[in-house]
Length: 313
Image (tube, rainbow, N blue to C red; front, side):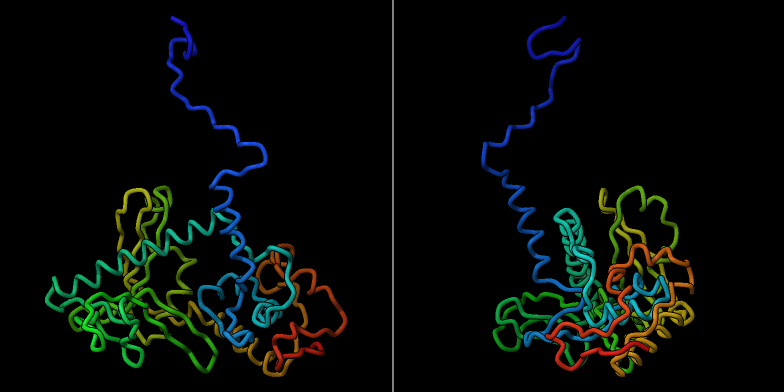
């Protein structure tokens, strides 16, 4: 039986998309515009308050840059050279995905912080903590478990600031998701979230995460990692243990050492056409492919007062 509001024998239960008022936006459009505008204040390298670029390597960024085995690209990225427009921008959808991932981290870290009392200190989330009331920081010089009470304001609520580390000889800095003290054992904690399709097929730690995890373990001097994968759809968690393997990051450290050598000499190395691994595959999609073709000397951003690069190696 057909009638108004039906199609064939099925009731029309679909709601029409509302028409946008002329000259106006949906609120979600304004939100997306705002989220995209955050790219204007972001850079591949984090800037310090004084406007200079902090020249440090971050493990989470190194893997993509190191895939091509191109020292020239590392130097370009490290010195914030001119890159393809929008190549480092994050669209609104991707930023929401990243922020959801951060929310997963904070939730699981809070559970682990509460686990210390439940297990009578058998399990403790170690790292840096900040009082939510007066913002006093605990554990900067030596990691600690969650404080019971703030020594300055007697507040008992704290935010976990994770577990920063540095490999000073290579200018590598990063922040692990946590350090777990479990009885006499100490583990690095790494948390990843993934959709059901990927989660169901994950039976071991994916290879593309191993360089980052091993770099964190090296930086913290920890030999094992508890690797957690959470299903975004169901919140189910899988746990894997990864043992430190220096061979996994051997090539990464070699490239960083070589890049540091050129940076200290203020020289840009010659392009190797990415011949180490995949030919010109990475050249075609490189964020610096335009500036890489230049054959004349140039200087980097004037904000980097002490890094004027004037010649090629």
